[in-house]
Amino acid sequence: MNFKIRAASKEDCKDISRMIMELAVYEKMPDQVKISHEELQRDGFCQNPFFQCLVAEVPEEQKSKEGFTVVGYALYFYTYSTWKGPTVFLEDLYVMPEFRGKGIGKGLLSKVAEVAKKKQCVRLQLSVLDWNTPSRDFYAAKGAQDLTVTEGWHFIRFDGQNLDNLANEAPKD
Image (cartoon, rainbow, N blue to C red):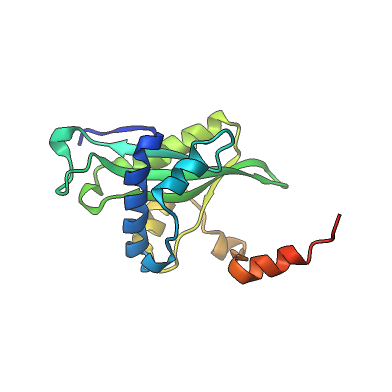
């Protein structure tokens, strides 16, 4: 299959938004998606972007059944490990179902790793749902370690009212 991987542009945000929803449906959480393509544009294509994104694009003659040429994406951001140093966190890696098994996911993942190495990142981290065996197997086959098993890490989240409550407890200046 002929495809290219390139940095996403503002103009790709509608396609990225569409695929975010497709991923959420696959992950059985479509009601969790609250972000719009306008917010993606604002947050990813500003002076200090919150994230970076790569897209996979196929030629017009290989477009999807629905007519899309942007068929996958990898959305990531930088973080910092106080033990190891610069880290890239892969928030999403998604390829439309009809384009899976053609090297696009591997290409996106490898490109994120290449970007990470160029930025002197020492590791690439991501999370995968426990029931998502195809993805867990895909990452394991590339050499990823499951830290849940080896180190016992749990991902913790504050959001909504709990985040508001915590912020309201901050010492006043």
